[in-house]
Length: 312
Picture 1 (cartoon, one colour):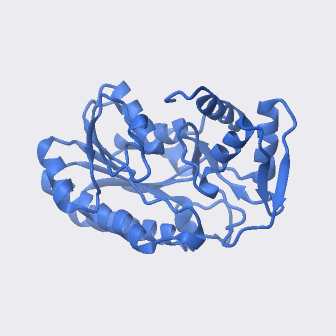
Picture 2 (picture 1 turned 60 degrees about the horizontal axis):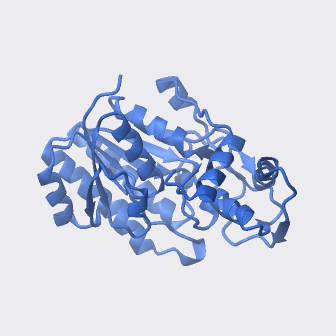
């Protein structure tokens, strides 16, 4: 049974955050959104949410938001998005993921808030020696984004243990769906979708055998909402639990489009991770969660969103 409460969602105008806001509001919760709109959009936001424009890295701003509301839980979805390993800005990653997380946790503790969820990423695993990557697989991030996420995770665990704060860490896989930003490799489904709708070729880098763990945004949100009601402190992979190659993704788009698509192959990009997928058995065991939306159905919903121009 869902508990009605006031939830602060950072990054609530972004991709995953806005879908989470929709779900929380639909279940009768009051939702306060904090977003600096650097990558998110007000077009994504349900008008019933209470919105504040500002950065989680600004402690005075964070304190002002907390002072105005009796918040019961915090879900920290805000993050700096890197478009490429070649254009990473470590200072931005640290400012948002590390300093921003510390600001939010300290403000939560001072306000007596009992639940904190941190949206991390499977990027903390880097290139694991064995697959699937489980929550106890050693973290060895190779990009600035993953390094900052790993550092923030450690602070979440530190504050949680010292102050007995209920806090869970969610390591999202390659979440895709409506409103997904078209940034680099993480947005390959959105990129393919737009190219299909424009009748443009789909670009495949390398041999197309790189694997990713694609999970539809509704499934990721379902896991997040369930974890709000789970007491304790733990870390969970939120993904599909299987690797999908870019070649398989291309084939899935062809099946959904019901037409032959043009494929253009280009040299592999620098910094490519290769094959990756994670284990989701822990989340299934603890909460009975498992991904419900098959890849083809998720692609259909994503294409429909971009084609119809709906909020989605």
